[in-house]
Image (cartoon, rainbow, N blue to C red; front, side, top):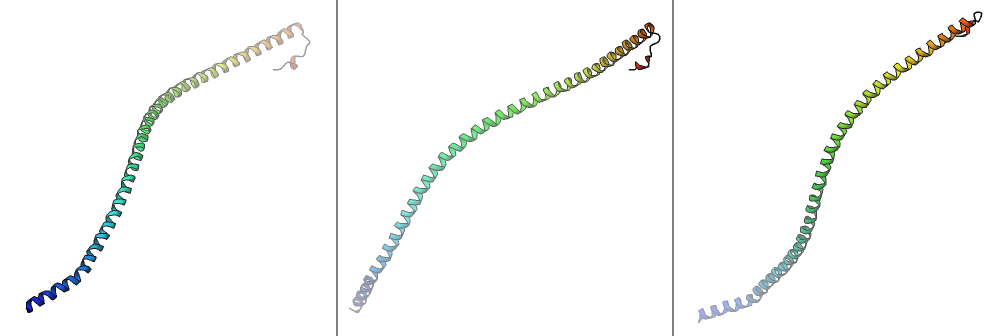
Length: 142
């Protein structure tokens, strides 16, 4: 009977510890559920963030594609502008050369006009000297 009593005492002690063990297990279970709920809430928030970022990324990709098109267009315009600039530089060089030639030609014409004027003046002085012998021609000086 001693063994039965010892066994009975062990069972009673075990039963007294059982509620505290069950309480500990229940507390752990509750903490785990609360942690799980918080993780689920975080998961839901992350899902919302993911969908927002995905839509934002689509907008960024579309904008990037548009910017690539604009960049290609601008590069084509730049190339065209550079070729036009070279054409205009060649044209300007030709025009400067033509202008230089025209200036030289103008100087030649001015020089010829001046020579003709001097010749005409000298002719007029000689004619005046021929018709008026006593006239002082010192006043007639170019």
